[in-house]
View 1 (cartoon, rainbow over the protein chains, first blue to last red):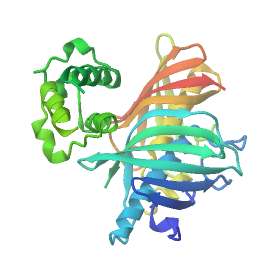
View 2: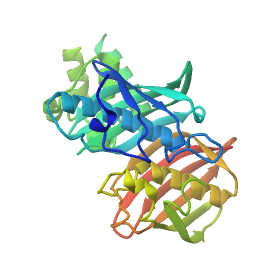
View 3: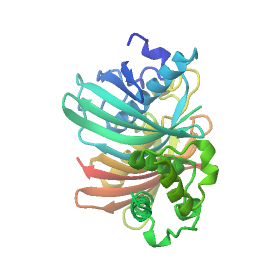
Length: 137
Length: 79
Length: 123
């Protein structure tokens, strides 16, 4: 999709960990990130620390929410906060140069709290997955 | 799906998700107190029902779903 | 360590029985992350608090650890370097077959910011 990611999420260097929103399909969306040395989660061994994967899932969900907001006329990307992470599993830490494709599924929303689930893949391998609740301010 | 099947499955799902003994889930018990629901875990409850029964409980219907019996009734009449 | 002396600095440690301790940390306002989180509006990233819990757990047990799973982590208040210059990281490590089950919270005199329960494994 040809919308600049900066229009969809408020995070910037060095903590911006989504490159683009690739597709939106109903309640699902896919985001992409190629790991480069310019993000603050890369450890000394060239691999991403696990909290970086949680942040990547959160920002992917934020990009999806941002896309919906922009589609309905918003000019600024909404500011979202993680309320809860539940059932996060990290299968391995991805390395510099790997490209992550992350599928976000939007669940129900009650009182401004939205449940999302995210699965991060690199090629055929599942890197990490979690459920998460996000407050959108 | 019979009423008994709904009750048995809902109770076992809730016991696993909220780590509460099934024995405390009597029909008249309050969902909120029994499962220690707050605004965050309430979303889990809604999602669990939606995923397993395809029943969406909209925010405006929540005040009607107070007890376990209310929840079984809601699922039965909407699925 | 990814964040020690960049995002936070350990000021003191109070070790308790077994693998339990309270780390007092300073939140460092000059950390580069605030350039992007968010421009002109510095807010501590919630996931940095998770990494801080992991790093303090490593300091406590003296071994490198990885986060294999987070059972539940709740962010109950927003912390900022301005409003939360100092915080306490309370940890309890329970040995498991592959590492530790870690129960942790981050708080100051006013608020609780994070409640964490997860599975950290030896690296």
